Length: 208
Image (cartoon, rainbow, N blue to C red; front, side):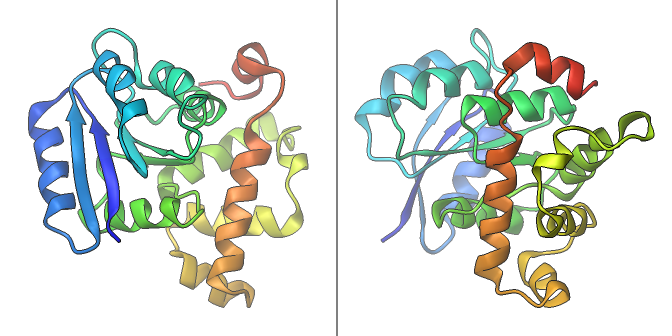
């Protein structure tokens, strides 16, 4: 069974390039592309889709707002951010909205495919420099952030190795774990970082 993917991206060249990458790779199928959040919101609930690649900067509603509307209607769909926005505020707002992975547009094509496969299997892929920004935000002003205290020692180790650009298998080898256990730790990290106090707390806790 192919992983069925939809793309929400307003830049035509990027949108078509991602669609070609997905359709040209074994085990993947791009079933639809959208130029705006509004088009996606109207169409996606009626389609059989596994993963949505979502940009943040879109005309009209942005990608985070799009997920906030779609996720309650399409709980089985995994939303994977693929964007040029790297600030911690955007990362955590995307997580709060329901994204289960966060990549930047500079991510290598092969790693984008790996991320789609990973999120479909229950993982939560994250670009290494996004992980570095999260780690840096934890230690703002030299003190351990309250959010970091939610993570176990092992989860902190996984996040630090992820921030260094290591793949799941490399992290697993270093920590003497299975790759599936590493995937579970990263999913738990995502879940714990979805703080309960919402936007006001996010803005205070994770400064740009």
